[in-house]
Image 1 (cartoon, rainbow, N blue to C red):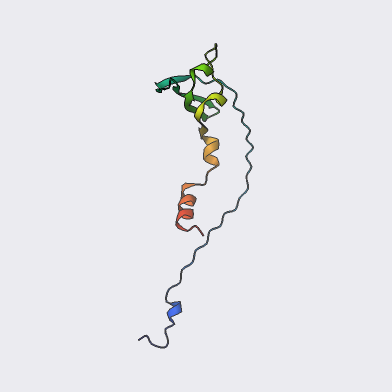
Image 2 (image 1 turned 180 degrees about the horizontal axis):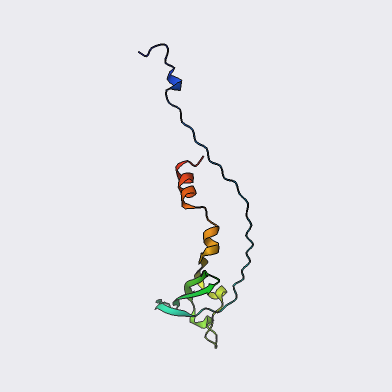
Length: 120
């Protein structure tokens, strides 16, 4: 059906390439040693307490946030009204942040989009 001069294997050609070069260095060291106040958000039928707490700290244009939630037995609460993190059942502890350092450690939006559309 096609003339002999047309090669069907050369009708469509598609290719892409992505290359990134650069150098950089980030040295980061963090240690969490703090006391977080939490509130009781519920009491379970067996008497255990559902707790939730949040603490936010800002340092050098960087916001650090610690979230904690879980279930505590009343008998694990000390006389000082504290509980160790190892005594929180179903503990959900999240630590993260936002700011200039966090932004620099991520690829720019254009590069992220390019990587999504052409992942190979």
